[in-house]
Image (cartoon, rainbow, N blue to C red):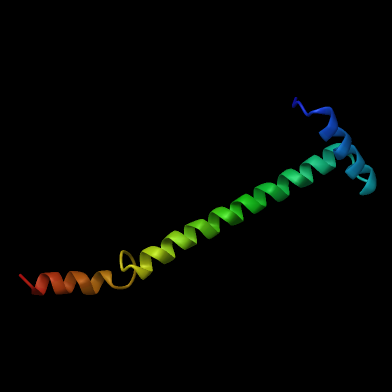
Length: 74
């Protein structure tokens, strides 16, 4: 069971009527949309972090070359 303020419940019911949906249907659709949007946001954030790390040379294709150079310098 969840608690929803009356004014929000009235708005949900109005949306449900306008879309010819049940209240549960509206809540399910909105929850699914929010969770999908959140997963997309998190994916973009991870990609940004990885892109920044790669640009700075902290990760990525240069690792093998850096190891070779380090070995050759000793």
